[in-house]
Structure formats: structure tokens, C-alpha cells
Image 1 (tube, rainbow, N blue to C red):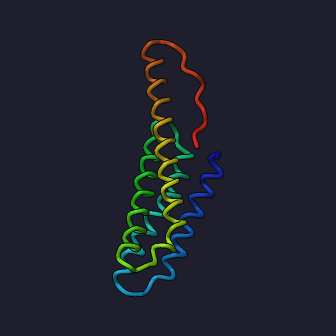
Image 2: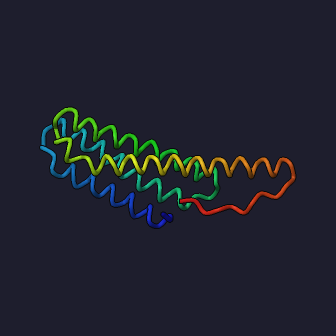
Image 3: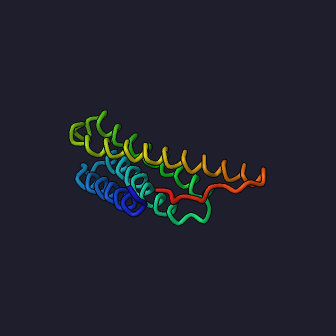
Length: 137
């Protein structure tokens, strides 16, 4: 999956979460949880997009850390909706699966970028030439 595909995937995830929140009951609890889950799900897409425009590998690693945190927080709110009975658990299966996949992608991307960053720093310290940087997703 390339960067543009993942940008679209995270955008679609945020839009699906917004769709879920729109059909929640209008009571105080659902409205509070709804605001939180919209914040975290849209944060996934926004921070991935920002990561793609990172000025350095360090900045990319930091943004992917935020993507991971926001995706995990979104999973928390989805699980809370299911466990409290506010939403039928089986109706969240797709969102939970997608959220877990996004967390896994963010963790993997962050780990790869961090390893390359460490390699670049070591190469500079020892005066060797690092391999050319690869574009992250």
C-alpha cells in the first residue's frame, strides 16, 4: 500500500466513524463519546497526512506515533460503545478490524522509519554512506 492509498484509507475510516456517530442516540453520554471518537478518528487521518509531508524522518516517526495513539484511542471508544450496549457489538466488527489494521500499519511504519533513522545517524557518526532513503507509507 502506498502513501496515497493509506491517506484515502484513513480518510474513509474517519468518515465511517462520523457516520456511526451520526446515528447514535442524542443523549449526553452518546454525545460525549461521539465527540471523543470523532476527534480521535479524524486525528488518525489528519496526522497521517501530516506525516506524509514531514520535513525529516524524525518528524515522520513522531507523526506515526501520533497516528498509532489516535487509532488506538478510537479502538478504545469503539470498544466502550460495544461494552456499554450503546451500539450492537456486531455492528462495529468492520470498524474494529480496520482500526486494528491501521494501528498495525502505523507501528510497522514507525518501526521501519526509526530503524532507518538510527542507521543514518550511525552512518554519519562513522563517516560511511547510508543507503538512500526509501519513501515511507
